[in-house]
Length: 290
Image (cartoon, rainbow, N blue to C red):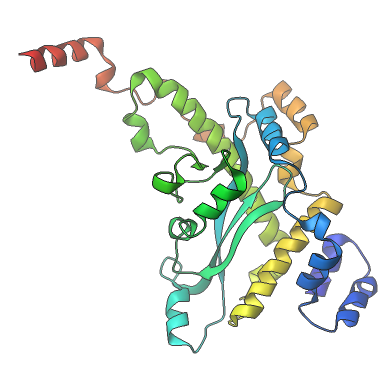
């Protein structure tokens, strides 16, 4: 564990182990970072309006999105507690796991997270437990998600994301082109959450091993990783999300038109239906009149 951390920050292992010995415990990271670097690891280092401005500079069609959210399932050790083991069992992966949802801002930091929930809970079911909390935190602004999260009911106007191909065919022709453009923007923005998850799982090898079966220990491991991620982003600055939403990157992006996920965008005219034919509409009106 310590090898991974001192390589992540590029410091000598002897320097890193000094505070470990001082706090005399394996779980010193969560306590140490919260007390010593609370102004660095806290989630609101930039204001909501600044987040909106950074995203709007990249995607001018949206002016109310502040971040990107996704879920990640992590394997855990089995437990002898029957009810807990049953709750942690993920039928999709056929393994014992915990589900976690994290929201990243354009500065690369995690500003909202739900950690250490049962692996049998899907992202949609999990989000129902904290949607009211999100409302209180972000106000009228929105978070971009994938199709695994609900965007109707209580989540309407808070969670936004790309629409499905089936829904695209049902759009009225007068608004279809505009809504498909917005959907393409959400597809582009949602990719940032994948970069964030890759940053967590790729940077911290501890996530490649099974998490402890003890709930309290598992919570401390997950919290520590999120804190160290935010600290590393603030101090080292090596974060793909932060790089992509940098103004200089946007200048080059606009000049070269570089977009690697263009293949997933909706194209104009791709989802036209028979209802778009004026003659068809006219015949339908005549039939209904008769």
